[in-house]
Amino acid sequence: MVSLPLNDRTVLRLRRLASTRASTIEELAEEAVDEFLHNEERRAMRRELDAYSEMHSQLLAKYKGQYVAICQGKLIDTDSDMVALAERVSQQYPDLTPFITPVKDETIETFVVYSPRLAAGFEL
Image (tube, rainbow, N blue to C red; front, side, top):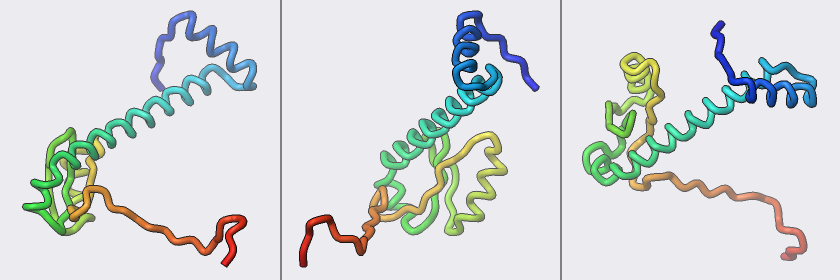
């Protein structure tokens, strides 16, 4: 277990909120840190996706149909087998989460979902 010092104002705010939620300040702090880390991971993945989008035309010319791994804004590895690529980069970069994607004509694949439901008031 790790102890994290918090200033008095933060502790007071946590205590107030904990009393209204029937929770402990430790549970609230854990929840807040977990949410912060989740948001940071999403931002990091967004940066990798943006890097992939910027590199897309060069990647398409050289690696079309293959999988690429992008980490910290750079191409770090490629392979025709996604599982092999994922295993290799997780061994080489155990503390990071690379963005792995197939290189296709579209940067972001578009999916069309058809639904059998009809809009209310629509008549055939």
